[in-house]
Length: 304
Image (tube, rainbow, N blue to C red; front, side, top):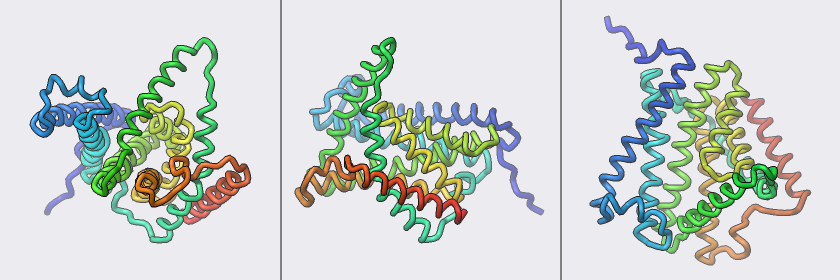
């Protein structure tokens, strides 16, 4: 008679699982990044010693290719691989552990799509509020560092978002929308939120902490507030639906919409101020956005 195999690390306490997950993330990223460096040299014709020094020149086409390559490597090494490995070690099934075996009905996906579209004015308003953030005088040095970091991130984003061809658009959809939606939701909702819930015993605190980590991870301080709110929404979508595919879908819509609108604007297919798509200073529109978003979230919660 065959007995079902027990998970390899089933006996670990919740806190020990968190420590193991951290070690797994660091190890996976280190190994993947090292292998990526080794493979980058023959792929791009750049010596390993020159790779790191070349990554700061955003005007160089080879540099952009390298940066996009490492962006893809990061999605796998930092987010996807460790989450899948943790699922196997903790439950012998990554699919079951990460709640990828629980598809939702089409209505849930439709409501999620409407939610992400309806919330655009509200999220963009949060961006403008975040931009007005001022730290106390004694933290002036930190604020200047944050602004400099934000400026460098904006330069990199602007370089990434240049899409002269359909091929560059499709690659950006993969790099900016598909892989981050899968990887970051695997990590922050599927793994971290679950581990925090097991350790703290409170799903709401777990959702908040996971959202804080999710927003902080992007290292873009003047977008911290809207990312925090999105992280909270993704966390509750996962909690209420029981399927990780729903926050993955919501995350994909959020990122993919930016890539699509930017591409259409650059091609002249849509006019106007496409870079500020969804932004408005009209308080009534922002209020309607809030009401519709809250109503859809209420419906999703009731359907739990």
